[in-house]
Image (cartoon, rainbow, N blue to C red):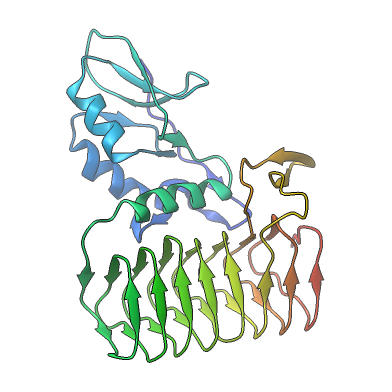
Length: 277
């Protein structure tokens, strides 16, 4: 039987935040574990656990839920054997957060609205809107979206595709956000596109910042890990933008590139390679 391990970090975003502390749908991975397992089982601290898969595992006689590589994702006292996971997995790379977030947000069934939505906004999908957050005129939301507390959304922006936005964020004029995870206190102020990306906390994207997310040949994106190109498994993959990053106006970011925490770009810069501190 597996034993709990120490949670790792995703240094492209933050070298100090543990993986288990990352918010998926604005709930930390550790809190997702507590809610799903309720003390009935233990989990790998870096695992993303699919709710339906965990429900079936807890109801089974299996002792351990494992991934395709035999890594234990969750385990409980039992004389049974292993159960294979198909939707639960260990988060090893920053783009794994996108996979976890899109699955969780897509599964939401009911609205939870604690903030204010202007009558001139259009909502087509399930929305979770935190206290103190405002959706301004001209905002169009398509698909499921989670927005935390004290955010300002709009005017005239487009959110779609299982997007999650943290506390104290501003998504502004003529911005499009698609299938992305944006952490707290970050701003995408105006005239920008963020698709299939992770934006860290306290980041500021200058006007006209564009993340490209599709290769011309349609193949999966690869991203450098310790100098080796790794297949991300994603046909659409934008950027990994670390905590505290500031982009200059009209920055263009090639698909699959990583901007490590606290770096900056100049106005008009084209990011063709990962930017490290």
